[in-house]
Image 1 (cartoon, rainbow, N blue to C red):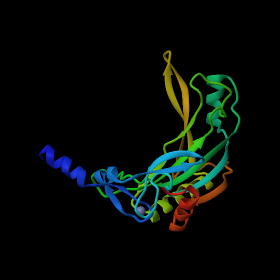
Image 2 (image 1 turned 30 degrees about the horizontal axis):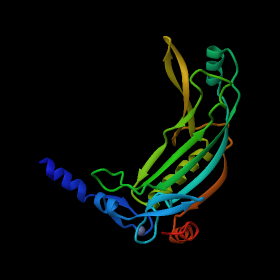
Image 3 (image 1 turned 90 degrees about the vertical axis):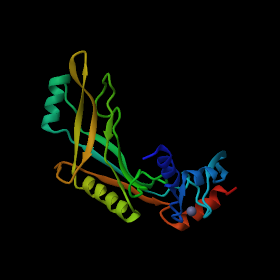
Image 4 (image 1 turned 30 degrees about the vertical axis):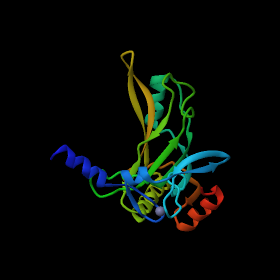
Amino acid sequence: MKEGMLSNDIIREKMFQCPNCMKEYTFDEWFNMLDTLQMTDGTPEKTKTCTCGHRFYMDKPKHQTYYKFTHHITVLHWLFNKLSLGRYCKPVQIDGMVSAVHLEMNHGFGGKPIYWEVMVFADAENKLTDSDEFGYRLESYCERRNYSMELIEADHKEYVDWLKAGKYLIEYQLRKKDGKLCRGGWILSLREEYQRYFHNVCITDDQKIGWNLNDVTFALEKGGLR
Ligand SMILES: [Zn+2]
């Protein structure tokens, strides 16, 4: 394939989608779209605005679920702590969020367009132990991308259900320092086959933002267009 053909293909490919009216844009169309100035909490911000009135990035549709749970340290965790640090490790409370969004930018690169994504965020920074040279951070690599709002809603629900059912694992990340293996962080993984028996997941808030037309209209009235 000639280079010119490839770049023409990229130019023709639809790279952005308005999550409100579902209109797709190529890179060219995107760059030629007018920048409009919006006021966000008194601060002017430039943003691309679709002909339907949707403000890209600012009105991005979201479905977020906030959760808390107390992670109970298992015998294995306890032993690891005792041997490596010479002390006990207490159960720890974890705050997190399951968040589904329309990405507005195509993540299907070359294949079928993908605009929807769900991610699980977990935060237990500085809660897992008193101190550590790397800093303890609980990370989560749980994410899925999907082709439609309906599919991503199902993915979102599945992650929430797994959390509620205690279908997760928290694992150590090991890193080498001065020739010794040290714990360099923690990872939260969600999977159907995992099962923790001592769990207490509490969903504190469940909200959809801009998942339908009415919410976008509301956002426009509030923010002021052009
Ligand atoms: Zn639109």
